[in-house]
Image (cartoon, rainbow, N blue to C red; front, side, top):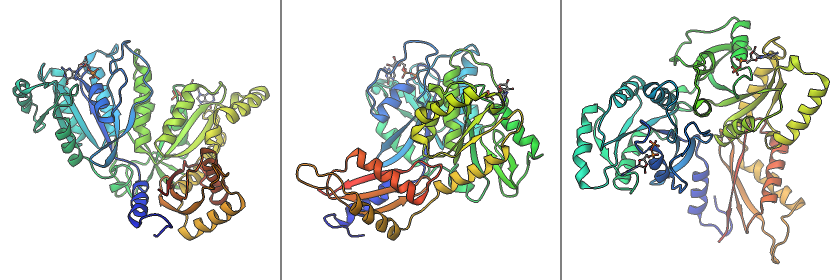
Length: 455
Ligand code: GDP
Ligand code: GDP
């Protein structure tokens, strides 16, 4: 497309850059203190303190966007946590298992100075079982003298150990090149083989909101746990459930059904599991306990799903317990706390009584439809033309920036690129998003708008 004042390559480049779907996921795993956090910080260019000073600290953020050699991916950071009451082996195993599940490829970090430990061997067995591509990072090789230590890690049977110093950066570039070779272009779980299979739902929410009750309710009521669907391979942690005549895949349900009791670090595991489920899913159903005030943790979970670019449904559970007063306050809380996701379909349910269970599927379908909406370029520009004529951008410094052309670069979620003659202010961007939603729907989906400004 030619846009006044832009090179054709710029336009095509911008559309291509914005058009990517879900990013492939790379997990960095390994024992405590091998240097995972240090490595993650190096990859994403973060300069924060790398070592958490308190055991069991709450870590909310576990995924980051990263880029190497022009390719973007998501990074799952499992560093900075302490072993909990389960003991070192079980903790490492639990952490590794969650992270491997979410990932398309794994960097397994071993401390080359220490060499392979029994715990490392246990992780190797998990990696074998999962069958995902693995890059072995032999860390703390700060100089040439450490190379021999790295070479001894061939014994793990994971192929070539890549000697690196996460601290100083030595060897990390070569290792990342190997990572890019191992990492698929797009997450297999979101596209790839799963296309045409059952749609994937992540049922998420903080502890005790009723996730397991809801899952049992929907699974029992429609008498349905489908064991075998032609052409699908069943991950043991996923569950196929028929709802409204359609088979859905509820991802990562093992964590919902079997609650492992974790003391220290429980919040961290919960965050990691939630992130893993969100990555694997197309739509997140976020369960909120309507009988309690909406909490910061609820908001973080919503933010996680929105940042991941997933379709979203919000279900308010335990509706059976609400009196009139609580209902009043809940509405006020929703208005203030969830204003940024006012577009998400909402259902008021009770996993106990079964109230409004039948409304869940239409809400999920609406959100997925919004997530996949594609607006033809002609229609989009007709709309933008009218909008700009009726509501021009405010004049700044004697100039009036104009939107010249727009196109939808991608779906899942919808991503738009707008080309403008000058800087477009945040308020005007929000106005455009609001009007886009009014015009085209986009129920239940985040939308991305990037603006390119003419030089
Ligand atoms: P994590 O628990 O696996 O996330 O490990 P951290 O990233 O917190 O690192 C544990 C310790 O190892 C810290 O004191 C780091 O400074 C140190 N460390 C990490 N990478 C290297 C490295 O490449 N060389 C050396 N010498 N020390 C490192
Ligand atoms: P999870 O931790 O999110 O899986 O939550 P659970 O399903 O274990 O539920 C936590 C508690 O809330 C249990 O005591 C449930 O019986 C209760 N609960 C779940 N859903 C409802 C509901 O709709 N109404 C009422 N009154 N209690 C519920």
